[in-house]
Length: 113
Image (cartoon, rainbow, N blue to C red; front, side, top):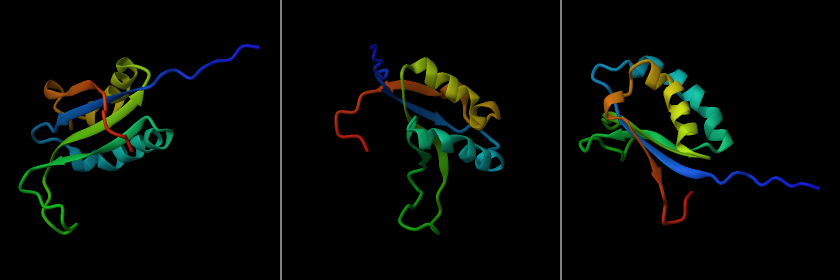
């Protein structure tokens, strides 16, 4: 009887600023819809926008100015994540500044949610 073991999963963090004059608001609903299955399956652990230091998070009504995305993925290797990133509507439509995109391995040393 053969048994298969699940592949070891690693974490990767994406930091990418938004491109100047990006079409973010027009593709945000599609981005959220496409990332939802990745969240449900556990591939995306955490995702959200970075806000400028002047932004206020104390209230939903307070001014908030997003300037980029942060996503933590869990996958077998960085190539798997790179394919996911490059198929994201934020990537294909020019929301993300591809020249400044950083996708790197992430090794948490504290418990991970």
